[in-house]
Amino acid sequence: MNAIRAADLLIGSDHDFLVNLYLAALGRWPDEEGYSHFRDIIAEGQAGRVRALHIISGSPEAQKLGRRVVIDDPLVPSEPDKALATQLSLRTEFLHRQIGAAPAHPAPVQITQPLVRELRSELTALRQEMRERLAQLSAEITPRPLPPMGDPSRMADQLHEALALAEARMELRIRALEKRLP
Image (cartoon, rainbow, N blue to C red; front, side, top):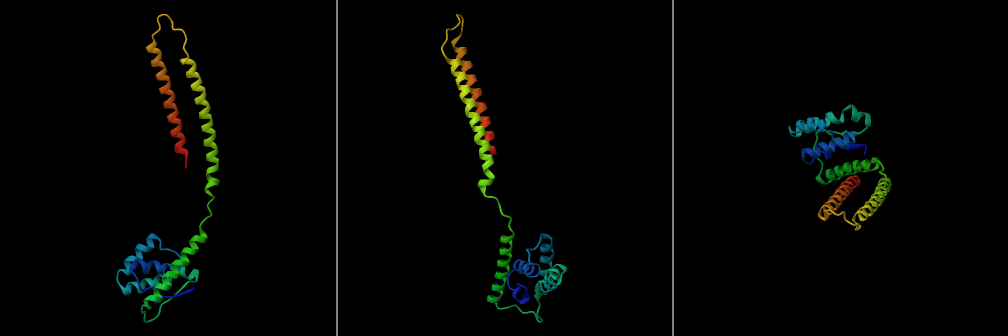
Protein backbone atom coordinates (compact mmCIF):
# COMPACT_ATOMS: atom_id res chain seq x y z
CA MET A 1 0.00 0.00 0.00
CA ASN A 2 1.76 3.14 -1.18
CA ALA A 3 -0.76 5.98 -0.84
CA ILE A 4 -3.56 6.08 1.70
CA ARG A 5 -6.30 8.67 1.85
CA ALA A 6 -6.48 10.41 5.23
CA ALA A 7 -10.27 10.36 4.90
CA ASP A 8 -10.10 6.55 5.31
CA LEU A 9 -8.32 6.89 8.65
CA LEU A 10 -10.75 9.27 10.37
CA ILE A 11 -13.42 6.72 11.27
CA GLY A 12 -12.91 4.89 14.56
CA SER A 13 -11.74 5.50 18.10
CA ASP A 14 -8.74 7.67 18.92
CA HIS A 15 -6.70 4.51 19.47
CA ASP A 16 -7.71 3.06 16.09
CA PHE A 17 -7.05 6.36 14.32
CA LEU A 18 -3.58 6.63 15.80
CA VAL A 19 -2.60 3.01 15.12
CA ASN A 20 -3.92 3.22 11.55
CA LEU A 21 -2.11 6.53 10.95
CA TYR A 22 1.19 5.03 12.12
CA LEU A 23 0.63 1.97 9.92
CA ALA A 24 -0.27 4.11 6.90
CA ALA A 25 2.51 6.70 7.22
CA LEU A 26 5.28 4.76 8.94
CA GLY A 27 4.43 1.12 8.27
CA ARG A 28 4.78 0.23 11.93
CA TRP A 29 2.91 0.06 15.20
CA PRO A 30 3.24 3.23 17.34
CA ASP A 31 5.99 3.26 19.93
CA GLU A 32 4.92 4.00 23.49
CA GLU A 33 6.34 7.54 23.61
CA GLY A 34 4.91 8.56 20.24
CA TYR A 35 1.56 7.02 21.05
CA SER A 36 1.29 9.02 24.30
CA HIS A 37 2.38 12.26 22.60
CA PHE A 38 -0.08 11.99 19.72
CA ARG A 39 -2.86 10.64 21.92
CA ASP A 40 -2.77 14.00 23.73
CA ILE A 41 -2.87 15.88 20.42
CA ILE A 42 -5.82 13.95 18.97
CA ALA A 43 -7.75 14.37 22.22
CA GLU A 44 -8.48 17.88 20.90
CA GLY A 45 -10.95 16.36 18.42
CA GLN A 46 -11.04 16.67 14.62
CA ALA A 47 -8.50 19.52 14.57
CA GLY A 48 -6.08 17.39 16.62
CA ARG A 49 -6.48 14.48 14.22
CA VAL A 50 -5.73 16.75 11.25
CA ARG A 51 -2.67 18.11 13.04
CA ALA A 52 -1.44 14.56 13.83
CA LEU A 53 -2.00 13.59 10.19
CA HIS A 54 0.22 16.46 8.99
CA ILE A 55 2.95 15.87 11.59
CA ILE A 56 3.25 12.10 11.17
CA SER A 57 2.79 11.95 7.38
CA GLY A 58 5.28 14.81 6.93
CA SER A 59 7.86 13.33 9.32
CA PRO A 60 11.35 12.46 8.06
CA GLU A 61 10.62 8.79 8.81
CA ALA A 62 7.54 8.80 6.55
CA GLN A 63 9.42 10.71 3.83
CA LYS A 64 12.32 8.24 3.98
CA LEU A 65 9.94 5.29 3.66
CA GLY A 66 8.13 6.92 0.74
CA ARG A 67 4.76 6.21 2.27
CA ARG A 68 2.13 8.82 1.52
CA VAL A 69 -1.02 9.83 3.29
CA VAL A 70 -3.10 12.02 0.98
CA ILE A 71 -4.83 14.75 3.01
CA ASP A 72 -7.72 16.22 1.05
CA ASP A 73 -8.92 19.77 1.63
CA PRO A 74 -11.56 19.81 3.00
CA LEU A 75 -10.94 16.61 4.92
CA VAL A 76 -14.18 14.65 5.12
CA PRO A 77 -14.40 11.09 6.46
CA SER A 78 -14.87 8.33 3.87
CA GLU A 79 -17.85 6.05 3.74
CA PRO A 80 -17.62 3.66 6.72
CA ASP A 81 -17.32 0.52 4.55
CA LYS A 82 -14.48 1.97 2.50
CA ALA A 83 -12.69 3.29 5.60
CA LEU A 84 -12.97 -0.03 7.42
CA ALA A 85 -11.73 -1.93 4.36
CA THR A 86 -8.68 0.36 4.14
CA GLN A 87 -7.98 0.06 7.87
CA LEU A 88 -8.31 -3.71 7.75
CA SER A 89 -5.96 -3.81 4.78
CA LEU A 90 -3.38 -1.73 6.67
CA ARG A 91 -3.46 -4.04 9.66
CA THR A 92 -3.42 -7.18 7.55
CA GLU A 93 -0.41 -5.93 5.60
CA PHE A 94 1.37 -5.13 8.86
CA LEU A 95 0.63 -8.57 10.32
CA HIS A 96 1.85 -10.29 7.14
CA ARG A 97 5.14 -8.37 7.40
CA GLN A 98 5.46 -9.36 11.04
CA ILE A 99 4.87 -13.02 10.25
CA GLY A 100 7.36 -12.88 7.38
CA ALA A 101 9.96 -11.20 9.59
CA ALA A 102 9.52 -13.61 12.47
CA PRO A 103 12.71 -15.58 13.07
CA ALA A 104 12.51 -19.27 12.38
CA HIS A 105 12.52 -21.16 15.64
CA PRO A 106 14.22 -24.52 15.80
CA ALA A 107 11.86 -27.40 16.19
CA PRO A 108 11.16 -28.24 19.84
CA VAL A 109 12.74 -31.66 19.30
CA GLN A 110 16.04 -30.03 18.27
CA ILE A 111 16.05 -27.93 21.42
CA THR A 112 15.09 -30.65 23.85
CA GLN A 113 16.99 -33.65 22.45
CA PRO A 114 20.33 -32.83 24.16
CA LEU A 115 18.55 -32.12 27.45
CA VAL A 116 16.57 -35.36 27.24
CA ARG A 117 19.77 -37.34 26.54
CA GLU A 118 21.48 -35.73 29.52
CA LEU A 119 18.51 -36.39 31.81
CA ARG A 120 18.32 -40.02 30.67
CA SER A 121 22.01 -40.44 31.44
CA GLU A 122 21.53 -38.96 34.91
CA LEU A 123 18.50 -41.17 35.54
CA THR A 124 20.51 -44.24 34.50
CA ALA A 125 23.28 -43.24 36.91
CA LEU A 126 20.69 -42.66 39.63
CA ARG A 127 19.14 -46.09 39.04
CA GLN A 128 22.57 -47.71 39.24
CA GLU A 129 23.32 -45.85 42.47
CA MET A 130 20.00 -47.00 43.94
CA ARG A 131 20.71 -50.63 42.98
CA GLU A 132 24.10 -50.43 44.68
CA ARG A 133 22.63 -48.75 47.75
CA LEU A 134 19.84 -51.32 48.00
CA ALA A 135 22.38 -54.13 47.68
CA GLN A 136 24.40 -52.53 50.47
CA LEU A 137 21.31 -52.19 52.66
CA SER A 138 20.33 -55.80 51.91
CA ALA A 139 23.74 -56.91 53.05
CA GLU A 140 23.30 -54.93 56.25
CA ILE A 141 19.89 -56.50 56.86
CA THR A 142 21.02 -60.09 56.28
CA PRO A 143 20.62 -61.88 59.55
CA ARG A 144 23.85 -62.53 61.31
CA PRO A 145 24.49 -63.62 64.79
CA LEU A 146 23.99 -60.88 67.31
CA PRO A 147 26.75 -60.08 69.68
CA PRO A 148 25.85 -61.35 73.10
CA MET A 149 24.89 -57.92 74.40
CA GLY A 150 23.50 -56.54 71.06
CA ASP A 151 20.31 -54.52 71.07
CA PRO A 152 17.95 -55.57 68.23
CA SER A 153 15.92 -52.36 68.52
CA ARG A 154 19.10 -50.31 67.93
CA MET A 155 19.77 -52.20 64.69
CA ALA A 156 16.23 -51.48 63.48
CA ASP A 157 16.71 -47.78 64.24
CA GLN A 158 19.97 -47.72 62.24
CA LEU A 159 18.27 -49.40 59.32
CA HIS A 160 15.38 -46.91 59.36
CA GLU A 161 17.85 -44.00 59.53
CA ALA A 162 19.82 -45.37 56.57
CA LEU A 163 16.64 -45.82 54.52
CA ALA A 164 15.38 -42.33 55.41
CA LEU A 165 18.71 -40.82 54.41
CA ALA A 166 18.72 -42.69 51.08
CA GLU A 167 15.13 -41.62 50.43
CA ALA A 168 15.94 -37.96 51.19
CA ARG A 169 18.93 -38.02 48.85
CA MET A 170 16.83 -39.56 46.09
CA GLU A 171 14.10 -36.95 46.56
CA LEU A 172 16.64 -34.11 46.28
CA ARG A 173 18.15 -35.54 43.10
CA ILE A 174 14.72 -36.11 41.54
CA ARG A 175 13.67 -32.52 42.32
CA ALA A 176 16.90 -31.21 40.81
CA LEU A 177 16.18 -33.21 37.64
CA GLU A 178 12.58 -32.01 37.50
CA LYS A 179 13.70 -28.37 37.65
CA ARG A 180 15.81 -28.92 34.55
CA LEU A 181 12.93 -30.27 32.47
CA PRO A 182 11.52 -27.78 29.92
